[in-house]
Length: 496
Image (tube, rainbow, N blue to C red; front, side, top):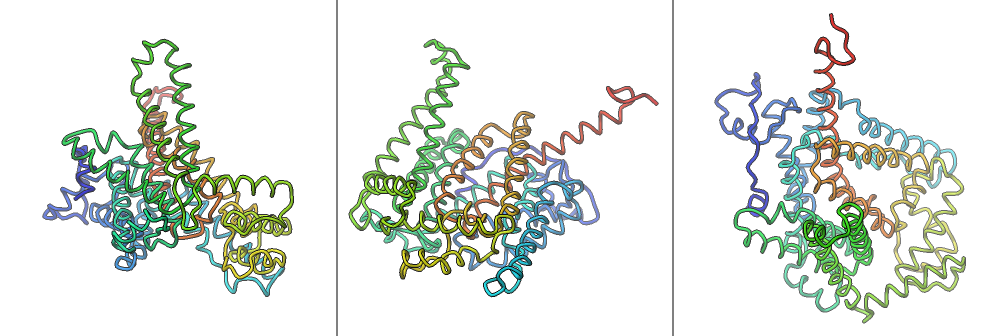
């Protein structure tokens, strides 16, 4: 009900596709398909309905209701695989799909290499899904089909599922209020850091799509719901004491301010008249600065259970990084940042021995368990990973694994820019994707989110929407090219 209230736009009517799998008496599916159908996705209405239902259930239930809806993921993978390979057409040979096969090949190559170089430490069998699970978005993108309405429902249901997590998984109001006493909250979502990045991303979604979510009928009611969700998301970020999220917020605010000033000075002119004419840019700048100031003030004044403020912890971390840069690790205090720095140093030593193929899917544990000086520093602390997705990826799968994601980033950046220029991706979606990747790049420097289900879920959620816009643009360009080449006398085509 909340999601329908937030995303209740009038959809463009679509023509129903006829076919043997769609009897005329299925009036409910006819109406549903007219609302969610897309010209460029040739799916039978029953399959379109089934796929979208499973995708929406996955987005909504993965965080808070995975126990009750654990069956959804397995069923939707089977259904989506059938739909994609049966009706996907040219998309079945697109680059993202080739990267899926490449990711499995890299895992297999690394596993074979580990059987020869360190068989006693190697995994008993190749875990081909370790990297392939990051490409689940390929199937979901096909169903989303670049539809703004579908994607907003997709994101909105994921947001709703996250907002229900304190009551579905955590301690409810009691745990929420414990954050005011300096206790770290996590609501049962793995740990506090993972909870922090999820709610941080929720806050960014609410900010970027402010106009879509608030402006319209019953603006005061919509605005109240939006404000409550934003305030709660920001509160959870600070109650989790996750420093990487406020750091990402600060970087994003700085980028927004610099971009806004550049637009005002170099694009719109330097006069007061131009500033008044572009008051939306000015209002956005003021809102960004205000929210950033409030957020950073709250973070710096937040006290943890040890009585240390966010500002003190930040200063201690900066001093520790300066000491580590000098090469002296012996005197580093045993803090969360200290553990990260020393484990990264050990990981790079291991990476230097096998830079191409890496050490395998269990490399993070090998680094921690079999580096003597690191064990002496850690002591009895139960650490099992390296707290950095980039370091973890390099140590596990070397340059081969890293190159897969590098290719994906380049392809995605180029495709997204072209889709935006061609009018197939709205500007606010483009901004959100840019904001996400800056945010994601920063928080993954301090935690291995990409190797836990929370990170895999978020990555697939965002990439599914982004790739759907890119594929929609490619389909439209291909249609235009086919029309151009089929018309006699068209430019570049000789008449019959």
